[in-house]
Amino acid sequence: MAYFDDEQLDFEPGLYEAIFEGFSKPLELPKKQPELVTINREDYIREIKAYERKINQIRRDQESIPDCLAYRERLEVIAAIADPIDRSFATIELAKLLRVSPSLLERDLSKLESKNRATDTSEVITWAELYNREQEDLDWLVHGLLPVGETVILIAEPKCGKTLFAVDLTHAIIEGHDFLSHKTKQGKVLFISVDESLRSTEYKLRNRNFSPSENLGILSKFNLENLDSLEKELIDFQPDLVVLDSLRAAARGSTISENSAEFADKIYDLKMLFTNHKAAGIIIHHSTKSKEQEGVSKVRGNSAIAGAAWGVWQLQNDKSWDNSITSIKEFSYQLRDAESGNFSIKLNPDDFAWQKIEDHCDRADNNLLNQVIDFLTKEKPKAFEREEIANALQVNDRSLKFVLAKGLKTGQISKRKSETNLRKAVYFIGE
Figure 1 (cartoon, helix red, strand yellow):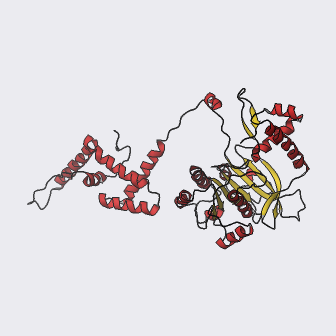
Figure 2 (cartoon, rainbow, N blue to C red):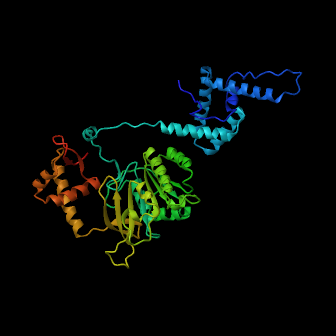
Figure 3 (cartoon, rainbow, N blue to C red):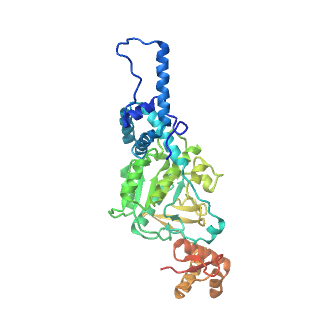
């Protein structure tokens, strides 16, 4: 059984005396003769050295193991306390019991937590094992745009419609209807609104015709430095989607600049918090003003911020339309494990819902997609390779590849590995 020694915790001199006095029988110190009033300096030094030898012997003594373990157990209890105030109080109380400085306990707590993190292990998996493992399709919250448990960053210039976009998506998740022609999974949404007043948020929700619902939670106070409070809300409310509006407002007061790579650690922590609670996340942020940068480079701040997210969504004025029509935007998305894309959208002033604008190419693609869906529906439950569908419909393979990807994004078509050829995929209509 292992226990802490000098190399593991490196306790301050005298700390063991306090530990063992609290947990085991008192130490037997050298007794002084009561009639002695003074002591020779050399005798005093010898007495101190003898005392130190006794402490060192206790460190090596196997009988001290239960005391060391008891100290470690108390440290682990304190380390598990999430609330910083409760943790400080527990540290002070233990310091009083042991008659040591709380700073010494904080040092040992830090070493204990570092040691626990260092013991995390991972297993090596061969490529053959990974290749032959059953392929799992992404579990989409918004088909083709946002999977369950993943986080994206939504960027745009100020007053471009980022919040209205997130509000419309929130409405789609709560009501379970399509969002920009993409199917959604109905669920609960936690909307963190720290970029504007609660009254402004209420105004946007009313304009989008939200019905009173217990599936929508609104959090008006939050700071990135206090993820513990957010985790409590995630445990209590159990949302399927968390919207943070906005990153800059939530980081207000932070001493870390968003231009620093260290700032991206906050995004990683936030993303992992969402993932651990099986919630997807949308983090609203500003884009850069530079006209030369494009794609993920438009995310303002350090480039590591974009790298911390699963994908980047962007809203910008659509240059293919008349510049006077400011309500038409280009929505583009770059995703880590799915196909990227872009299309034009327009805000409906009557209900503040975003609508996808179709052009002639879209209509042609939709006609071919409908043919594919009709064919696969008639042949249910059979599944077909892409070449087989192209031959059956007498269509171009390149066009078919595009519309199949589109059908997968919208959730109208399903895909899995072929049972006869693991290198190929087959398409079918799911239940």
